[in-house]
Length: 340
Image (cartoon, rainbow, N blue to C red):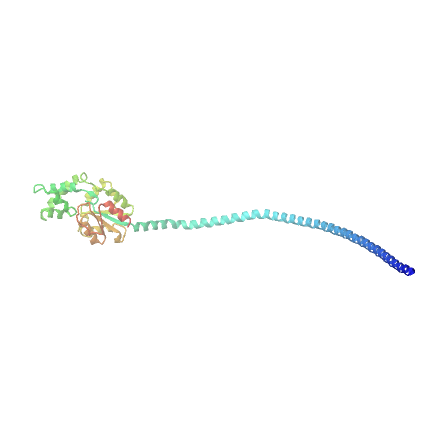
């Protein structure tokens, strides 16, 4: 029993020793393996590091070489570009100057070609504007001229020895030819010429003193001259009319003066208006205006086919509807016509 127990303990010890030895061997082997492995890894790492460092150094050197080459190439390229630019700048400037000279020459040639045509075109436009102007024909007594006092005194002198006409008798007769006026006063066709001569002789001496412009007449004439051709159509003698207009400093505004001695048939016949238009630029009749204060002016306008314009502050009364237009005075008439 004791021997058996010892045997069992011996085997157990042998086994434990074997295990210990085996464990020692294994531990040594493992430790040695691990050490060898760590040494091997260390050598590999160190070798890798060395190789990597060498490679990186090589690459770095290679990069430096490549970078230097690139920089050198870039510098050479820049130098070439700069040289080319230095060469191109004068050429570009020269080319630009040539283009500028060419454009200047073309513009100059164009202007030279156009210059000869400018004056005719301007003249043509000016002529067109002249042609587009309206025509305004003015009556004198009661329209532009305040002349009743001189006319009345002339009739008093002409009738002297027979009777003295009243103002009321003479006033509505103004605008008619002298022969018709004296006929209305009772003189026969045989007696009237003698009275007409006496009237003219006296009126010639006083007409300038006894005649003035109607209110607004000067302003009307000056305004009208800016947009229309102007003329005078009157039953007053043309010689007297020119003297009076000259003394009032407005004769210069008119292109034509038609008086009683200039026509065979005075107003209300169309002849005085048509004769005045013969001296004007050709103008459509709807742009022609006859401004007057009596029925004779309006009838003459209608007979001539032009616009009749009645001004109410003259000798004619109650003439509404006889003309195309009606105004209180000549200035209002001209202002209106200007905007038509």
